[in-house]
Structures are given as structure tokens and as C-alpha cells.
Length: 116
Length: 114
Image 1 (cartoon, rainbow over the protein chains, first blue to last red):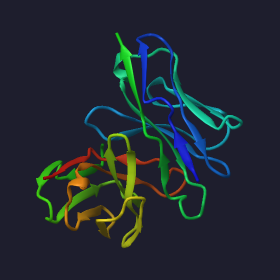
Image 2 (image 1 turned 180 degrees about the vertical axis):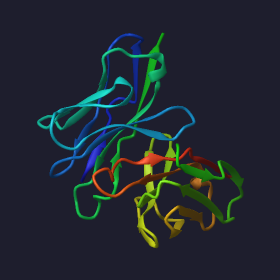
Image 3 (image 1 turned 90 degrees about the horizontal axis):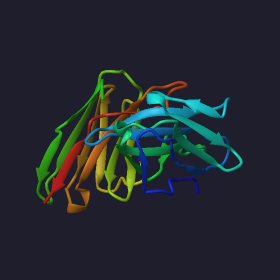
């Protein structure tokens, strides 16, 4: 079965420190991977995606993510966290079967808290 | 949230009543989606549409129906609301072509079924 796992429900980091939000996936074929962010009482916003090419993908608000095929991971990173980065982060992968390649398969989300 | 509106934004209703949520887009995107978001479950796809009058079921479609009679509107109907359908509902859109999996989300509708 195709799936996405975000192993940490919550991540805490001090402002100015680097942050990592983890994501692993299980799909057959070449994955299309995505990160979204949800601020309180808002809809989700697209951050970045990996389709092909360079394993390090840069996105909005200074975030980047590294695709690692051997570890089936797509971890979200930022070199220096801001308090305003505190939000809920979702990893997603596009289905690769004919029946589900119009849909995204979502992780359960990781709550990031950046402490001043 | 630009280009996508949802109405109503908040609704309280009683068990057994029908409820319709509306998603309206001004982006002319081909694909539209309805999700529900619940603590511990993340986002779950209810139904989606890949064109006018073309819809398909998601993973939690029981008790829900949808209609899309024009590109800009995607309606979600709870035929007979139950307390288990208390949730936050999000509409999303995406365009055809190379960006079609980049989904853009509306602001959400908070539905409470008493």
C-alpha cells in the first residue's frame, strides 16, 4: 500500500536553530513529493515539491527539502528557525497507480513549535 | 487562499438535516477536491472532480455527495448529517499540466453537527 509517514507528532526548536521535520514514504515507481504548511485557522499552503532532478529542493519562506531515494525520505529543513514558522506541516506524495495518480496521499502532520 | 472561497465558513446544524457546502474558485483550475480534517487523522479526501460533471470518490465518501455543474463551483452535500461529520472541511484546487498536483486550499468550513 502507498503511504506517507511523519514519525514525529511535534517538533520543538529554539529560534535561530536549524529545524528538520521528517517524512518517509512508500510508493512504487518514482514519487512526486510535496510539503505543505498550515497556520492556525487557515487552509494549507504549498511549500515545495520534488518531481525529478536535484535532490535538494528549495521552496517558500527559506525552507528546503532533501529527497533521499535509498532511505525513501523527504525531510523538510530550514537553517535558522523563526517563531513565525510555528505551524502544522504536512508531507504528501502523489499516488503512482493508475487509480490514484490524481490524488495526494497525506501524512498526518507534524506540529512545529519554535520557541523564542 | 486567493481565488478560492468557501461558504459558509461556520455552520451548526442538527443530526439528520441535509447540509451543502460550497467551494468557488476564480482560477479556472480543472481539478477540485473536498477534504475533511480531524485531529489524529490528518487530511482525508472525500470526493474530487477532474472536470465539469466528472467526479470520483475519495477515501471517506460515505454519507457525502458532490456536484460540479460549472468549472468554478464544487458543492459538497451531507445528505443526512451525523455527529461523526463534525469536522473542518477544506476545498482545494489544482490545474492541469505539470503543476496539477500542487493543490491550493480554501480557508475551510467548520461544521458542527449536534
